[in-house]
Length: 144
Image (tube, rainbow, N blue to C red):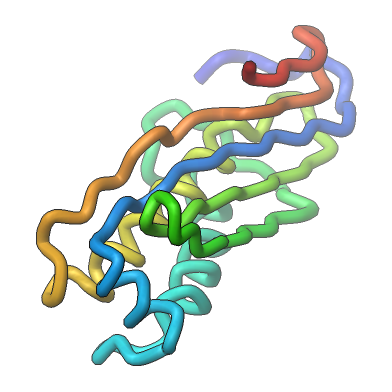
């Protein structure tokens, strides 16, 4: 792991997003809460939050962090069609939380896929990326 002990503890925030593209019929099932496995959006939201807290267990050399905030928002998008997942992670510490935000989005997207794969094997998880970060020595970043 990288030695971050000399860095000051500062407030750091990262926002990541991704999407699951699916058939319109699949999105209708998700929105209506009619998936056989249950509440897709609620379950994916909880899975994303849990995943952010365990990023260090999944990614080699990732620092374990005392995260102070994780929020996962999942918005249906009929134009896509599918859902857009956005995770915001916050910490006061010596290293950033980009990996935690990306892990939250990835696991939330995978959970959506898992819960409705029986009706739509052709779903795609796309565009997982950091869209914003603040804090730390490198300053702020916002995707175009």
